[in-house]
Image 1: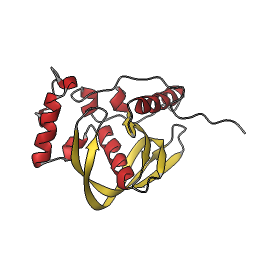
Image 2: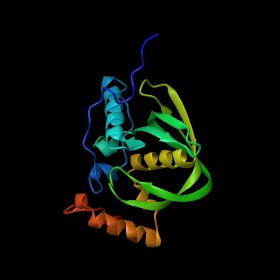
Image 3: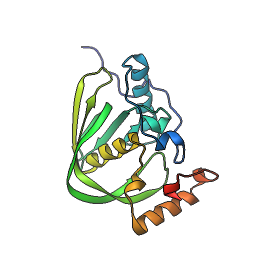
Image 4: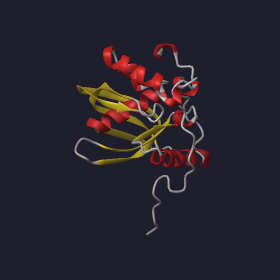
Length: 188
């Protein structure tokens, strides 16, 4: 039986795209080339996600404007979900809306209570072009919605309002990585 490699074990660490960089705030393009470069991107994304201790990562977070995300995320029952989706579509987001802490590797050190549905379904394909359907509840549903938002050019702060939003934006402005950075108009 062939030995399966651990996702990311042969990947290269890529630089993290931070809030304010245009690629993070622009809808991503569909993947049309399912060759070795896509496989390398997915492998690099896993390596980068693990290096930055995340549970999900969208391609535009490493500067690539393609519709791809990877995940290694538990749900609320601590069941591990591991995989990737190419050309994902969020086909269902429903159930109870839960406000929970949410952060992002592209906004290091900033967290805010963010409302998300407790159930999500994403459909797309694998890097080999095979259909895939991923269903999640709880924290994993939050992850699926978060990564799909990224691919549309959005970030979790787009869902935060009121005092929570004000506090999060203040934390962004004070963050060392944000100094001298031009932030999108919606975040000033």
